[in-house]
Amino acid sequence: MKNTRILLIEDEEGLVLSLEDRLRGEGYIVESRTDGKSGEEEAMTGEYDLIILDVMLPERDGFQVAKNLKDASITTPILMLTARSSTLDTVLGLRIGADDYLTKPFDAQELSARMYALLRRSSMPQREPGTESDQIRFGDFLLDTKKQELSKSGETIPLNTHEYLLLKFLAENPNRVVSRDEILDEVWGYESETTTRTIDVHIAWLRKKLGETEESRHLITIRGRGYRFDTG
Image 1: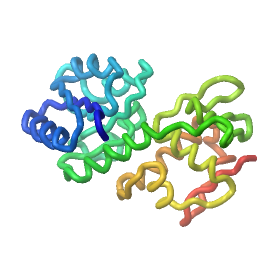
Image 2: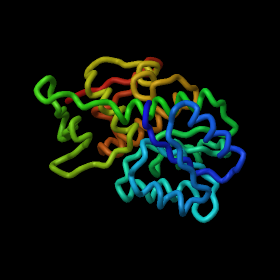
Image 3: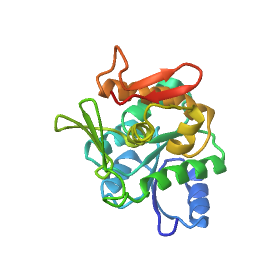
């Protein structure tokens, strides 16, 4: 991806050097910061196509940085790096604004795959007006695929990148069962056992935002097969 700008926020000197060399060798333009405060300030410029963000940072931790960026409406995809392996930390990172995560130590090819998936999704061109409807209505909700927004009665419901992509994919394939493999391929762009588990997390978050905490009306789990989107 020519001229793609990557911001690396990481304090491990050896990892910074190796990632800078690798990413520049792959053709990326790379800037790095070694603490959360200066990294956040640089990310706030909005000049980057992807942010690689470590959790354990001096000055300000990665969780707070990710939250502050999302609160400031910075839409740059965030790939979070963490030495922590607990599900709780993973869920927290995704909930506060990260778009994906990778647990240290990680394979360089896996990092490249995660980066490519996020960059591919964020750079996908919008559909030309008139070729297909830019609006998907279901129940009291409106999903505007041109604005990439979900709303109810005119009020915008904030979604992170994968929540939006997941809802869009399901809504564009109504009334049929889609498997987890389909979701991984279409929404995340790669297969990963860990990422498979995050599908349930994202479905749960979407249900909460749709007000379906007690009974699912639109996002239906088909046990052992996948999910079905009902428009009613």
